[in-house]
Image 1 (cartoon, rainbow, N blue to C red):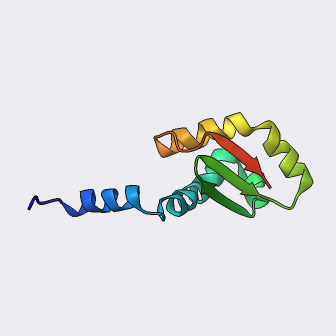
Image 2 (image 1 turned 60 degrees about the vertical axis):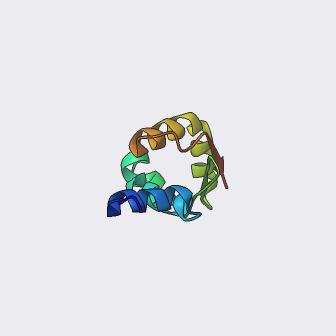
Length: 93
């Protein structure tokens, strides 16, 4: 039986786990203010990932409009911050 260190075992588990997107969304929420600014972060209610789409929820029409114009920028910033291509599209809700 091959030995695997704990870090590798956790990475393998997360890669195969359904929890992966939830953890990635939590990581994005933690850095959301740095990525998008204080005002946008303040009025963002929820961030989640399903497949390769980032879902951003807000009840403020002006913010939704602003985010709609910044979809490509959001994709770039999130992927750069995460160090890999996680998000290919953004859905504003």
